[in-house]
Image (cartoon, rainbow, N blue to C red; front, side, top):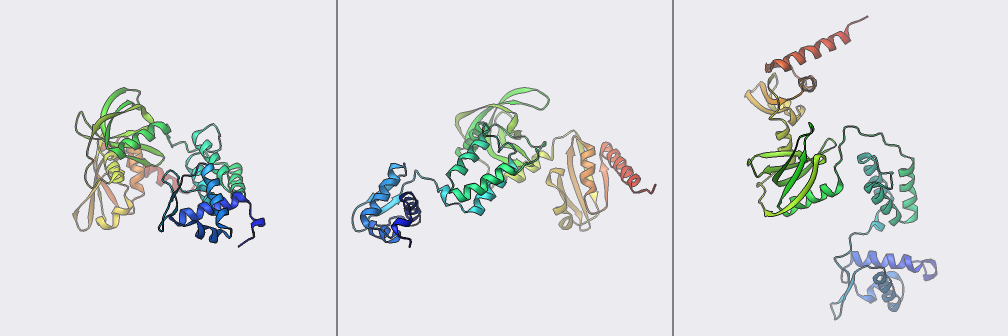
Length: 321
């Protein structure tokens, strides 16, 4: 243990905080022993923490001691260098305005770095300053306050009223039971039940113009798998109905077919039937081209044309000059 002259009061106070978090109910004499100081000095460090706004609670008696109150979140100061750098990298990868201090994410990241010890903060800041992430043009990030309101409503099981604007520009208001917020391929969706039509819906959160929490509770479906439900929802209801027969067993082909393409069934042990819908036959044909098995379009002339066009393009690309 370093001598008292080797460690600043602030550093000892932070060490005391770590001990309090790790050993709830620790007594003053044990805290002093761990810090290598007198019991009076240990109480002084507890006082420093309280003056800094840390909710330190104390109980008297033979079983009493100090503990950190519920008002304190796990300290950022306890992040290791590797953890801090990984967090900065994840933020930069997922949100490309993270270097802008006027952006909410950029502002939050700056506060996090300032709270870290200097050696860790210096490395994290260097990564943040020198990294130049390319914009993800497919991503569509919703407003943080809108997203936070929807997430809270999902957790509290309260219905909400949405003011929504579709991609085509149509606007409407609807009341829904919010089941879950799902992030899929850079887009945020609200999986919910329409109170008007009693049907499952998935709304893009970035297209929600306003949200109002209603004083109307609901009970979510038992055993809900939000990701699977969203994938199933996005695979149905589009303009072109699709049926494709794949010459491979279901167990072999299921991991290779994205759920968004539709539902898989097994007519016999050697083939798999894909049933779905799409508004973009060309995109659907490109997804089918990645399936590692022969297939045949049973239903949807538009998809059959798109597959033919794609096949001709690929054959032409393979021809010698």
